[in-house]
Length: 309
Ligand code: SF4
Image (cartoon, rainbow, N blue to C red; front, side, top):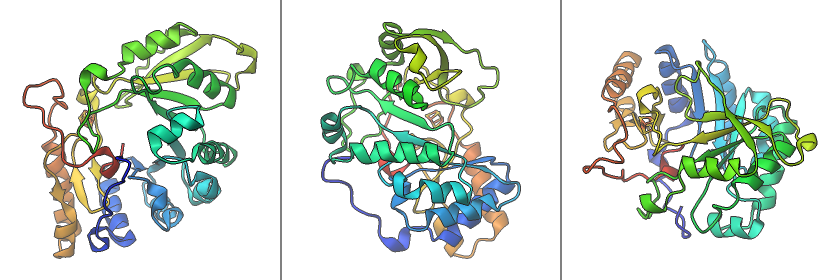
């Protein structure tokens, strides 16, 4: 997000709760087994626990998770868990409140920590923490973040920064790569790759943390760390995700430059079969990969904060 934020979408372009649930029901009917609520920041929307409860009532019941900046999670974690939320991913890039302010443009580090504790207390396990390392800002923090997560009982994941910033300022040469992250972690921790035949479309490569400082103080029996090499180790061949934006556009890839307008179709009276057909057509048109390394790569107009992770 740029410091000045982004314009809010006009309210009448946002899907209503009923419209959203209808599209999720159609997707579940087509075989979608997991629904993740992302954002922008999903907890800014009113009534998210109700939405979760309505999704949890669908059959077959999808797994339901949320990706959040964590700022409102202290308020919402218990209600979300009671409504049927299964898991939560919280973005936190630093342990230093001053750095947090610099990265997130707000003084909310303590609120995120409180949100994480609330999620854990509500039983939303495993609580996953996502960090993006930025060169010259927090790229020295990988071992500290992992040590903290091991002590607190959170599952730490490091994610390469992708060219989805609103300012279009991403610079591949400056990106902290998965290899670099692993090198920093290995300087402090003994890691072993976890062969995972069931990885499927999961984006993170998982490493077992065999040893490291303060081993006795770790809160996990089976400590793990994830590294998501979205750019340098792409997993597009296994990707089975599709994204529905808050304004009802279906995107078959984070980097898609076209969208399928389900909102307009739905409001023009499309029945469930027609909407299902649009889902199928969109997914069938999914490209083989993100093409970030290709000469024709075009950053999509929508930034990450308008697509969701
Ligand atoms: S296909 Fe698109 S959404 Fe899927 S992993 Fe690749 S870049 Fe991400």
